[in-house]
Image (cartoon, rainbow, N blue to C red; front, side, top):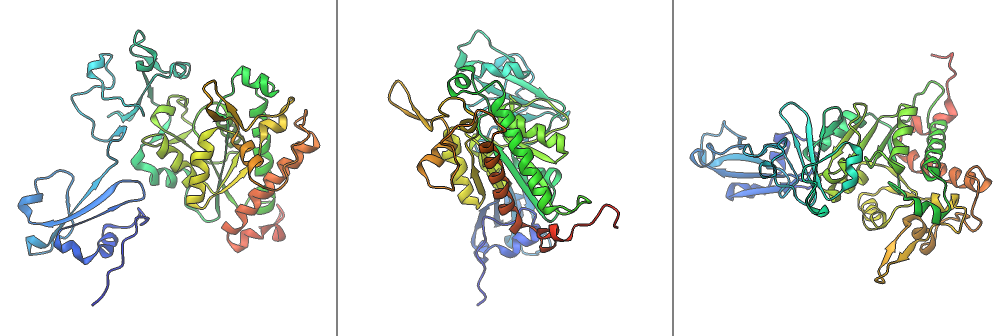
Length: 417
């Protein structure tokens, strides 16, 4: 008897329905079969007669040519449950209303909805700072934790949680020799933090930009010819219009590199309504971070707090991604650098600098941070930048075709065809 190959949850979302049918087990005839698709939704197939399923919404008959109704196979795709976004919103609710009783339910992860006219409305709670980025507070007299903020996007290209594959295809493309890179760290530094750490205003962000410029230049020099052919470099970022994300966005625009931002309803409130940008919005912060890591090939971690250690490192291992740690803030510090951890008044140990933590407690190649540089152009800083560029080249090479991996050896002049 022919055996049926077990269906993999990692099945390509671009597979046709017939591909899916060929992979499902023969036991479908005895009842039902379900599998989780790469975007997190669930495909369920059931057998039964027409009277049971024909009247249901969003159900598709896959084999109408089958004469025996009992052998009919029906498919339904279930999107994320308990999610913060909707494709078919409750028509009794009005996300544009100022009457709180008429608003959709807004959970701790926020709420996201695409309006009939194509605009996207986003809600979050308890983050007063979002008003600096164009949000309005609908109940300013409520306790801060219960204050509801709304922001409407009419320009930004937003991909909903069920549109991940579409976002990748439309923004990052599927051409060969694609290499997707990113940089993460601190989204914002308070004045006190900069003072304690010995950093000037915007110095950390400027350092991150310099690091990115040098790394991109190294990749292009190694894997592109003089006619600009070879490496297809793409960038992804954490979405916010500040800190390390803003540094990456600026570099992407300057170099004209296609880039995709990642966010969630809670953090989308910090993203500018910019027609030149595209952002994929996960249903919550966990999915946002997971999709971000899943998408990239090489991540430069320049600092950051617990998220970088708890999620990013784990996800990088899970998806087989490369992370390079460089403690940018400590390298530029005029004091004693940025500590890996700090102890709160209640005795809780908090991660202050993920890059410093990895470099301090786990053995890596020498980072040469014993003598803190006062000048970002000092020899020590240049060594760190060159090392990061080398690690990016090391990660990129094996992903390219043989022709472009060794393109440096066969560069064309601008006069050649």
